Image (cartoon, rainbow, N blue to C red; front, side, top):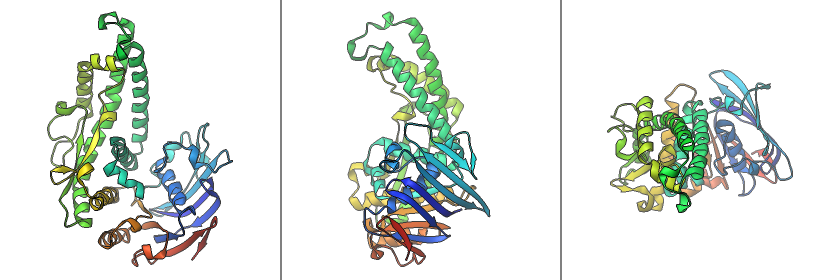
Length: 390
């Protein structure tokens, strides 16, 4: 799989860019603040319908404009598809495939698969659990686009259930005793319990099985980039705690069962009902989970050095790339956003060794000296609102 052409209009700082691309390495070189990252962000948006830098679409549209357009020509196993996304904050985004409109923007998911490594990835190790949950969910969608719908449905149910808990609960002691709660409201809450258990079980089973498959790739990738460090491993920490069957989410354990997880979620939701009514928030479910990153016997967060943290973040991305590459659907495009400046010479060499074997890799750098000599491919200079072949 590779990107043959990228076109953006009114996206971030770019009024308009037409960028022809080819297989192998392509390097975008230019001073900071010239828009190199914006181009990789546009490619990532085509792949995931989200930005790795911001949570909403509004910052993606050039100041003073009401919409942005991103168009990409993707070649996979000899077949070319053109994907176009219209980003319009405050209105519904629109998508086209080969100039034909599709029902929902997420219908384009799966056409382009990417793995992006950027300076923001340090948050995977040092940031909040939400960063690591998003990492897992984004990778799930790359593997199977239908999980975009699963995640969206879970988020919708969670919002509805939280709103109901706040309206009928005793949050802050403002409500009466449990027996005085409206029976109709409690029966409605049971309905949302069922919805949460159903959607949550599907998402949770997918995450557990993903972590089981990804774990060995993370361990080997970390050993590649930091051979002298402690061994790395990942584990899924669920809000269900000991209610999960032993071995789920581990490489040698059994595959997680959606049906069984639904039953477990429903039972545990019943057990914490009183506490949830008091606090007015859902306390059980995938939205409360975390991906544990371990170095030896210690958690990476809080114990890893700066170099170890970078190595772990890099290992997570390399593991994602290797996992996707070994599956059907096309080898992902590798996007490396100004990362070589953050790595020492040994880690640079390890990353370059993997990246140069990719079918297509796009690299950004502030100066040529930051790019390893192995990336002897096409070079573009990015400066003053223009992209020119170097």
